[in-house]
Length: 322
Ligand code: GLV
Image (cartoon, rainbow, N blue to C red; front, side):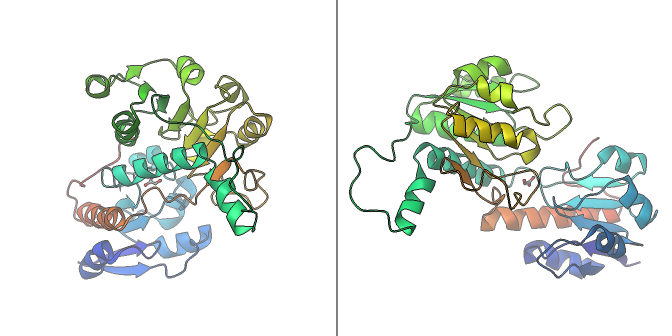
């Protein structure tokens, strides 16, 4: 029996070719995501769907598409777009694509740290707006990384990869918060497991790698930013929902922190009228953490394998648990 599948966006051929070969598959052809209605329309009567992090999969969606659905394969490591309690309750398996984007995402975290620390946005604007008039002894003065303290919030795979780059590259001391201690990181790079309060108070750089859940939503609020050092560079490559954007704006404009680098926002895309857009000390890129050829190809392969395994009732390569 050929399974019916809906793929909610064009993804690399490395995965799509496998899906086409094994299923009766429809691929959403547009650049913009399907609306809720189109998502339901596309998935109705399907045995499996391949989703992106911008597709909201909740109880209403699952109710509307009907009981045929067996597997949801998310083309992402994060899966906060899926109500996993609801899928579990309905016996639908959910897959994700960890590991293969760890290095790419850690590279973007470090890119943002450097860019924000060294006033790169202001420098690029200076050149593009024909303001590079002379060598400026007192302008574009940033922060060093060498020997500074980096606080990692969420010491999973990507947090550790970011810490490794900074510890071995710039001799940075590593503080971290996590649900459990990470003995490997402690012995490898003398990382210290600390409270969030200590991390906020002592870090010169803070890089966020936690997942988004009710406990981490808006964990970076006014009080968190006020607890940071004035030279602090704050970087978020996890999910926009962990940050209260108004509080971040206030922190960046009042001087309570030095700069920020963001790969994620809430909502995504960043609101057209977000006040963060025009701040010279806020570097923002459009959620490109996993954006390398090899990461995206590998994500596509894993997502395809997860989908096909779920359709045939086999264990997924990476299955998400509620
Ligand atoms: C990207 O943010 C992902 O979760 O893969």
